[in-house]
Length: 239
Image (cartoon, rainbow, N blue to C red; front, side, top):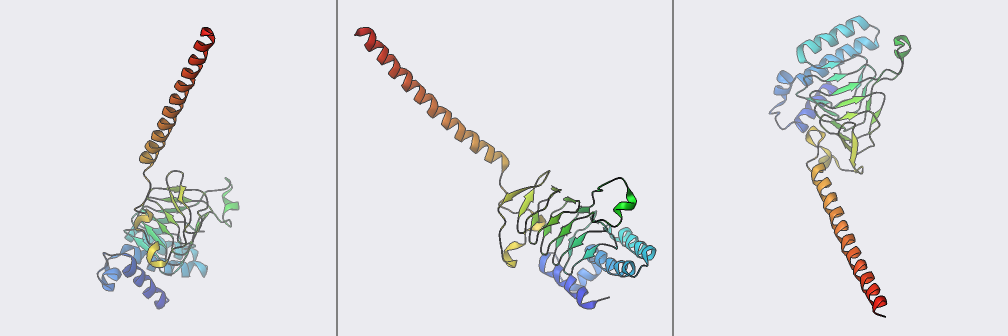
């Protein structure tokens, strides 16, 4: 096992989890960190063609942590799986450096056909760029790309590519703002959901208020035109 990689994973938790009091706490009591350690072992076995043993180790990690990472998945350093329960990362998923996943996240596959044999060598799962944040309960499905430093809000269902630095929310997920090029200090948002998330009800009410003002103006103009036409008709009759 690469101990520099282990240290970088511990440092990532210290950097992004305010509840982490010490490195020993992470090593002894963080299931997300434990799941990463199981994946290091199972991935090594998988890449050396010990497929059955690699799958058994990953399943053991799932039993103990509640987090399922297929040994074929590629995981970069600095991954933080916060809380972790219910996280699923599929076989052909690729996760970049310094990515944050919350509980209930699925990096799942969408089968292109019913022929299971033809699917084995295909890319079926997402690619997640460096520094991305995926909020709790989010489902990222298919061979799509979530760009670096992107944010996926809680419970979003993502089935299309997410641009670098963009924020997406909803079912299906939609971009709520133009992608931003932000610094490391600014880009972390817990659960992938920014505090300045627009209120759809308030936005709708604002739009309705604007339309009502326009209707009121049109009605006033119509009344003025009717009055002018009435005056012209009266003059014609008087003449």
